[in-house]
Length: 87
Image (tube, rainbow, N blue to C red; front, side, top):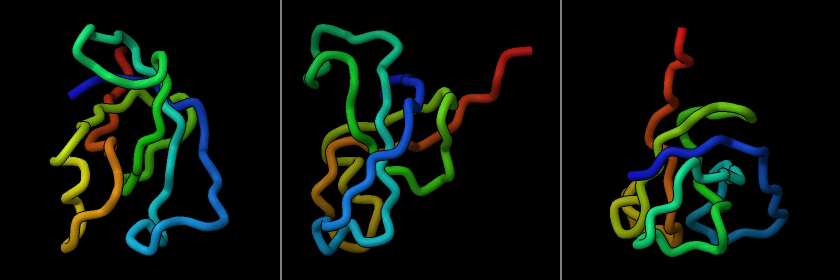
């Protein structure tokens, strides 16, 4: 799992059938580990929990991310938590 900050939404008029109704967000990773493979420190993550711009989120990647539905879907990153702001 990694932590990132939501930069905004990604709009795709046409998507794979398994992604119909799935919100996609652009996320900047807070710290990129050497074993994390992505283009720079920004990735696209599927969101089913209602994260929004500016939210700190927890992301899972790889096979666990693709199994959020009854059937596997072609995604590599899934937002699994919104981190509460520090007080």
